[in-house]
Length: 403
Image 1 (cartoon, helix red, strand yellow):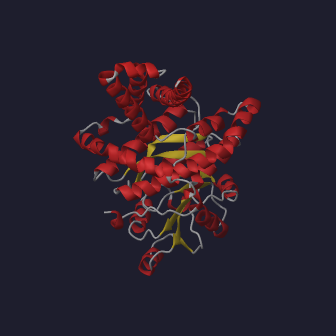
Image 2 (image 1 turned 90 degrees about the vertical axis):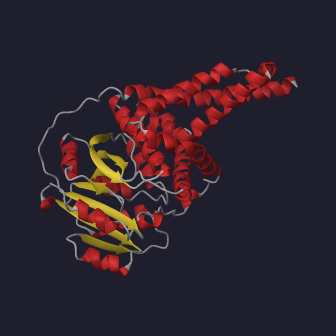
Image 3 (image 1 turned 60 degrees about the vertical axis):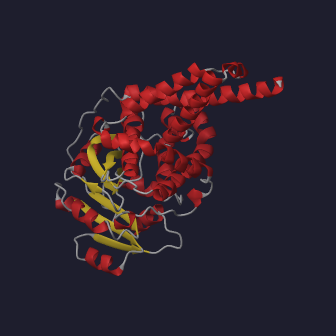
């Protein structure tokens, strides 16, 4: 019995340490994000030529609107091109795209990936671009978007992540997805830049020095999570990723649990694969070169998703509460008590409270919180089944088919 208690206590301390450190990490950046990051001065006023790259797989429902909105940019017309990389689009969609003043590249792959589509496009188009901007087929950018991107490059940055927000919040899953993304924006982008670390890439609304992007993408072979592999490479090589909070890009949020599950399974698989691939090298690079950005990114990859984190800590706290009320003597069997878990749960709740934008504090969000247990179940199952998801193409359908 004593041996069993010892093993249980070791596991208890290990779990508490991992969950506690993750919570403190989030809390540190949640508090840091309250302060404004320093803005660098403008060194030039160049108007750079921008390639807007829009890869899409069977995105017939959304691509036309995305292109037409992108055409409305208040940026010199001769200074940007819209390049659609169409994979498996319907013939009528292709015909309509051909009537628009864009560059259309049709592709077919045995295994479709965003990385393949982007690399194919850059093989075909001219190299007379200064910036590569990557959008998803459902993304809508505001009319001053390119102007703000250009300004960031005039400040000397070579990699920029824009502020992606929800295009739709029409049901509870969409609201939770929107809130989750805004928490990411706050903690992993805004707050990171506040303390001088790089912002996290998302997968769209990303802008790069064109030559850097082309040379780097030629090394990217990810089926899923190409942005994570790209991010690791950039940070490992010392590039700083800027975050433009005022450059808004609207992105469609998932509306069904099965879509949510597939999307998260792909993300989780990429996250943990790149964690194990980079953990040792990031520690070595931190010690030998002082590369905090790269190490910090790997630390992020090793963390549980916040919904899973919240669910596990809440479950344990409830379990300890039941024991505390109905069988307090049993608590002697544990190394920790109820107040340890209440403390960590409170700190996690505080970090999330600070990270959610004020506009989401309403009755719709409160109603959406009622499906958190379902969201936790979906995420937990996705975590169990994530193995191998990064090795196969998992498409997230946008537009009418998601309603």
